[in-house]
Amino acid sequence: MRPTPRAETFPVNTPAASQVFTTVLSQGPLARLEVARRAGLSPAAVTKAVRPLIEAGYLVEDADEAARPALGRPANLVRVDGGRALFIGVKVTGDEIIGVLTDLCCRIRVARHVPLPDRAPKVVLASIADLVKELLAEADGAQARTQDQDPVPVLGLGIAVSGDVDRGEGTVRYSPFLEWRDVPLAELAAMTTGLPVTVDNDVRALTVAEQWFGAGAGLSDFAVVTVGAGIGCGLVVHGRVVAGAHGVAGEIGHVTVDPAGRLCHCGNRGCVEAIAGEAAIVRQIREATGVELADAAEAVALAHRGVAGAREVYARAGEAIGRGIATVANLLGPERVIISGEGLAAYDLFAEQIREAFVAAAFGSAAQCDVLTRPLPFEEWARGAAATAIQSFIRADV
Ligand SMILES: [Zn+2]
Image (tube, rainbow, N blue to C red; front, top):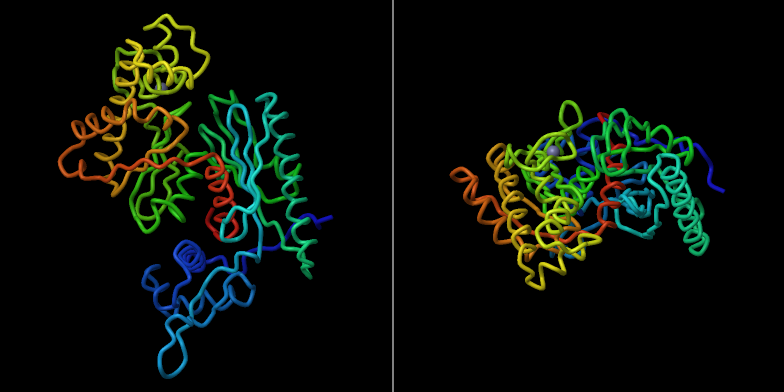
């Protein structure tokens, strides 16, 4: 059995140390001078941050054999030792939970999907606890096979949930899809798993993964827009994922597109989500065609068959999403907007309308923002949750 509680902590809790570590994690291996340049720190500050991290085994420095000069020593490159620690990330959806075991470089070693029998916090928590146990057993099994001297510690668990999540408090304030209000998830999950727990909004967690390893790597300002059951948005401004003073930011799903429009579950009318969320699309197509659709997959199939009424619903949804994205571009001027989410299955049905509405509503050069689509499976969201756990581990201020 693994020892609990796991008390290992990051050796230096300074902003410079976490910045150096994150830079090497997302962009390494790098020479120290390059780390300094990219992190905007002095070489002396990098040396000061790197030393204890090398001593603790989180970073290693190897000779850069590829760049060996004809004379003298080759330059050294700093990289993260992925095998030094493990983390677990869990993404909770309405009907399943997806868990991944990652190394310190946030590379997925094992991924598991578990169906959720019920959305009640108690049931979800028990499923998370079982899944974590299974992933810990995987970690131990792999180590037994490799005959490691010391077991690699699992240093944190990240849980990503949709809705209004207070990461600092570890509380899910309101999750419409789970029908949760004020659930102290971090505290409850820490008690059942014995691990330090970070709870964050799922789109924000995905945004961390995109910032470190995905289409946002190296960008200081970008947005991730997810389309599916809900319409979500993660924002990175000046290199930081925006959480908002009250835990809510980037809620483009609740930008008003039509004040006299359909009622949204948030209580307002004509929100992007009330027009373009999956449930809204299914409802509108049912009304327009009279076909009793079971779910979004059937709605997509109907529209692909060219059934009158169904295509129009997708066209209006695309227009609403495009206007929502233009609102983000007008307010923040991101370099790039990454569109993802399970709703991408319908993307060909509304891509043109998204693009047209975006260009029409974006002001001036905001329209130059690069809009790209990127299918990201739920494992990637769970990986984002693991990234938030790594973030909490290395950062003093979150
Ligand atoms: Zn709304």
